[in-house]
Image 1 (cartoon, one colour):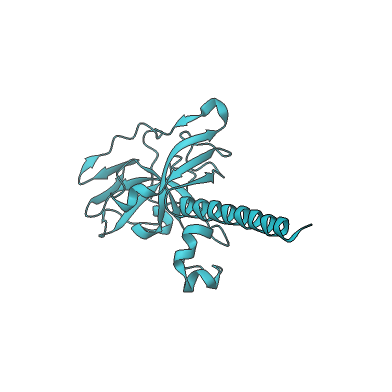
Image 2 (image 1 turned 90 degrees about the horizontal axis):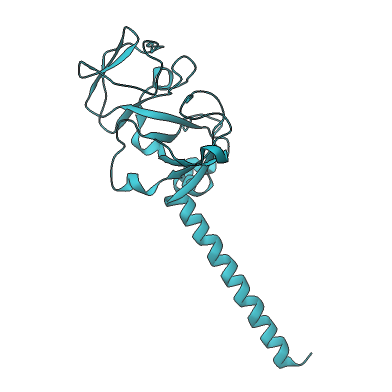
Amino acid sequence: MSSEKKTSLYKEILHWLEAILLAFLIALLLRGFVLDKVYVDGSSMERTLSSGDRLIVYKLGYYFDKPKRGDIIVLQANEDSESVNPVFRKLPFLKKFLYGFEETDYIKRVIGLPGEELDIRDGYVYINGVRLDEPYVTPGITENGRISTPIVIEENKYFVLGDNRQNSRDSREIGLIDFDKIRGKAVFRVWPLEKLGKID
């Protein structure tokens, strides 16, 4: 092979390596800041979501706006656990790109917002004294769990619950959720195909 052909081949290989690297970096940025996918494991969000569902999570929205009541969110549940990789402790921004190592994600619904008084009594949730209308929940079964209500939700914190109130590990056990532990909003179901579509 002539030197000109070798040079041309090397340039072609370099061009492809650059394209692959660029595509990889774009994919990382998209996963870190815009969209990601999650797999539902468990029954805590039934009847809205079922175990085995695959969802698309939109992350960018919460950079510009705060979660709203009723949003179904993906949140990091055990950041303070000793089992979390020490690299993530020192370089927390890496979790935006590489999360999933020794960590747990929960999928829950936002119920209480910062500054609100939340109460649970007689099987229902009350916000600032008004009973919350929750058509996605079996009526009259919501219990306090480990928390004592009423509580006033602190700034930059959220109270979350699973839709399956009798089988959900949520703010009644793990406490209020810091805003910076919310990974994004579940917006679209891609599997199973018969349920393909926007998540209400």
